[in-house]
Image 1 (cartoon, each protein chain N blue to C red):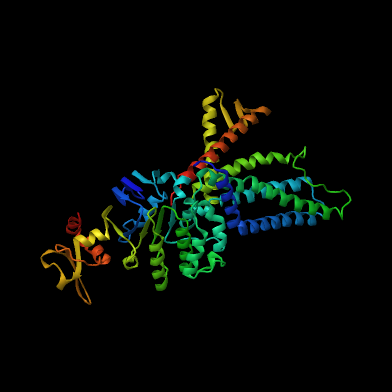
Image 2 (image 1 turned 90 degrees about the horizontal axis):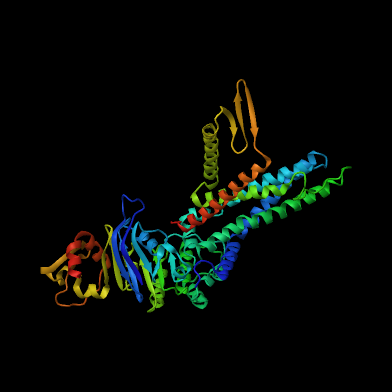
Amino acid sequence: MNNTFNFNRFSLLFKKQFVEQRSTYFMSTAVLFGFLTVLLGFSTYANEGYVAAKVQFTFMVSVLMFAGIIFTSMVFSDLGDKKKAIPILTLPVSHLEKYLVAWLYSFPIYMLVYFICFYTVDGLTVYIGNMHVVHKNEVLSLFDQELKPYRVLPVFAVLHAIAFLGAIFFERLHLIKTAFATLIFVFGIFLLNQPLIKMIFKPEVRNAVPFDNVGVVDGDNVWYIDSTKDSIHIVSVLLVLLMVIFWTSAYFKLKEKEV
Amino acid sequence: MIKLANLSFGYSKKSLLFRNLYLDLEVGHIYGLLGKNGAGKSTLLKNLAGLVFPNAGTCKVNGFLASDRKPAFLQELFFIPEEMHMPSVTATQFLNNTAAFYPKFDAIQFHKILAEFDVPSNSLLNKLSFGQQKKVMIAFGLSTNTSLLIMDEPTNGLDIPSKIQFRKIIASALTDERCIIISTHQVRDLDSLIDTLLVLHEQKIILNKSLDEIGERLLFSAAAQANTSNILYAEENSMGVNTISINAQQRYSKVDMELLFNGLLSNQAALTQSLK
């Protein structure tokens, strides 16, 4: 018997999760659909039928992040409640199978449902708006060359990893506590950056923005040295590493969960 | 089947609930676990189910470390907690979604026990009363046919006729391949049900004996019928005085678990010495 992963057990758990949570999932999807309708519909109505690509992009990104973080923060909330945690932890499935089901529902399946909702609402809004305007609106493409909306996907993956770890790490108030911990982490980076930069550079430096630029003091002048375009890859690699560390940590935290 | 070796556990390292605990439990028995409030009965059961991890020592069930919670270990274990959350599905839907995780699950047995308990299989579980929810879980737990069934205060919330049915159903569910552990503070609910008594007190298991062995060594009787020279514990009640004395003449008496439990708490040394 494979105690790490078994496809039959995994699919049974996937199905059980859906059947027992389907009313919550359907209600959440309805709320998401309604929220997008209100935002896009009101904006189009207020602009007499026009809905610019930038407006669509702003709503797409902000609701994706906002709803995704809330949903992910709740994915392990049952483990914070003893009554709910016992049947979950004693169900004969492996830690990996439990982890993968939570990960699948909160990341790829959430994104799929989100984009179906977004493009349905966006398509309808554009269609109705176009009945009344001269310059026709266009549905925002995920691969739009100017706005590059697809670039939000890796950003969402990083936020998901943070929220996913927070969901298993904290027993209650997952969202608030995760946001607070993230804020302390970011604040710490900004706080450490200045002394580190001063340690690295010989001339007097100031106003250093982490991973972006640094101001070199030359008498009364401050000369800014900007990072190269390619340096974004360093930040990207760091974020990917952080994401993998957070997802892996969430697995081990699940394995060590006690009630 | 269950082996606790040198197990110590506490929710904080400074105040341990168990210290250097040793315990061997075997299949083919129904164990009754007794202890005062806060003695750690539920925590001990959670250690067996891998829901909490020992600070020191090991807890092995069927050769698996409980804390690893491997599927091979979990599919031979069913744990019925004192308080439970039920999903918004019917008993039949719950069966369809959950039974497949237990290889020896018997659906006919499940429906039969539900019928005996008079619980509808088509009502949403979260809408049932606490007692009915408990009956569904007892029926499900018994039908999994796992080698270890743990029940924490199973009779809480059951009405009097259901308690009688519970005793009947549990007694009929015991097989040579199965170990059932029942924890309770309502000692009378275990009457004519358990065959071995475990008593947890002050971080230790102070008693792990079959009722037959206890009955052979101790005499439970009214003061008039007691072995007066060897009374180990006496308790006054409205009917007179009940005693526990040394059963020197091998007389038969029914083990009064409540009296024995009270006796162990007040005169542990003499009673445990007599039972050695």
